Length: 397
Ligand SMILES: Cc1ncc(COP(=O)(O)O)c(C=O)c1O
Image 1 (cartoon, helix red, strand yellow):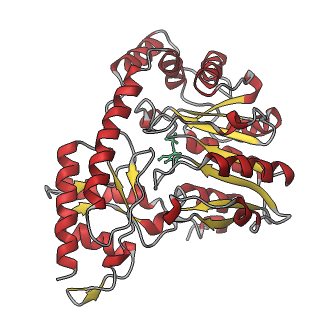
Image 2 (spheres, protein in one colour):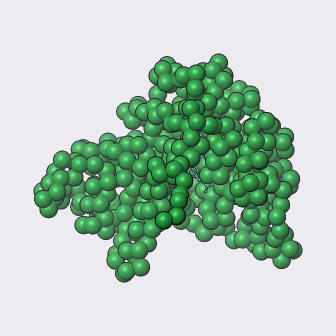
């Protein structure tokens, strides 16, 4: 038997990816599956961005680049931060990564070791606790309150801070809830973190998918970058998930350490994706607006349909691609001799009996919920909601 590392023993595979694979397998078998588990935009990458990449390849831009990304892309990212968020960064304060996920990994690897604690707000994006485990540090889970739109008082957060707390991870708008954190909460949190020397890691991957409010990046609150790392991505904004391109901006000393991690893991982000991203960021942004408008229509439809279903509790998402209803009012009922008691069993029931794929909330630390994605076409969403309604009637039969 080959020896494998102890550190991987408790790592949970990505449930969201597993659901996607399961749905794909069923589709391949010809089953009429409705997949609402998808965590990526359904739009193709805009044609112009593809053309930029083709040009880059034809021009021979196919070699390794600097570990931390090419200077022209860093400049585009700096321009983006100035344009969209009103923040000024220098090249030394920016790193280009192979997606936001690698930026999260780099940051956590660069800052954490055994014994350290990281505050993770619940529900959380599935990857945070697993990456924290890989570093040997511990996640300290702080539940957000669904009834007040997934907010939390800073006093409550403070009660979780110890002398081992190194960082807190924010994700606003959130995957899975779609909720934005409140301004007053962020302001108080910034003070708390400054006073306790805690790094704020702000995952702003869904920044451009916000519907009813203007987005405010973490550093725009006070302009102080000394304890804030902002992470962003090309994946959702430009529908470029497979291109693997993200970026982060923060204090130079931290960025330097993140570059060290990156240099020994991937060497550099994909050269072609980097080149195409320059033009994507600097070019006409109307495609981003068009996609946002389409997501908003879908969000409105899904929210309106689900909020009419009895005994489902639902926060109206401010952004991102998901709704996260509490379906626990439908737990405890018997189906074919088996009681449905949790989000995994509930999701399995939807998949087995109605060929409807969603992600169980347990993956995000909330067993009362399921995550439904609207990153798919309206006819599929309509049929998915129809099947969910039928399933809820059947459960209580
Ligand atoms: C909150 C959040 N952060 C980061 C990522 C990863 O993005 P990327 O494709 O840039 O690695 C995702 C992807 O689903 C996400 O939901």
